[in-house]
Length: 301
Image (cartoon, rainbow, N blue to C red; front, side, top):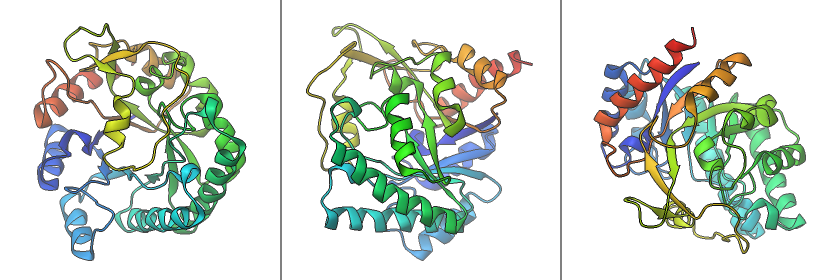
């Protein structure tokens, strides 16, 4: 298992600061974000050259683009989004990245209509074929409020896409909010399609606790990059959560890591901790989580 650092911890900092922190702390890999300071969708050749220089010697596990959302688009919009995804896929090949995140559609799986699944699968199939031609992968992040919000939804989607160059990013803290199993039991149902694991921690809390945020906060967060989203009409499970540093929330990471090791996982563990009450920022946070993860991994040996 390889520790990687997500650019989410440095979304508002220069890419040079992100690269230097990853290298000096000891991360061997990174996840670039499709954001202004890292790799925006309108990046030019000079930006690509700068990123190649800054991240030389660091493996790029994934490019977390915000391309996609095919399920909710008309044909013209979907074709335009597909071209954005293709641009990221070509950049991934140029930078030596393993995969590119593409969103299938921001409609919750239990409420999606047959046309949502069909439209998302058709355009993702095209992306997967383009990715295969370039020697990279399409990564679908398991995220509440999307077609891939649970193992059932993610597997249904990938069954319909039916192409080898597409797989999943498992994010247990996201699964907590669906709700669906987010402990060791979440690994098995998606094991054969697992590309990466996003590592962060959240707690289920009451509405008055410090840092409490509602389930629907993802609409504002993802809505920074995605215009159209359909919030669930029906809602099961807890309504309030809080962001935590690793080991301080409800995601049982030591047991999850043990399950991943038992199954022989050799991929990336991408640290993607979000800032909440008492959680440090930037490099301090990256150092803290590296220390915590290294200790947990060492304990498995």
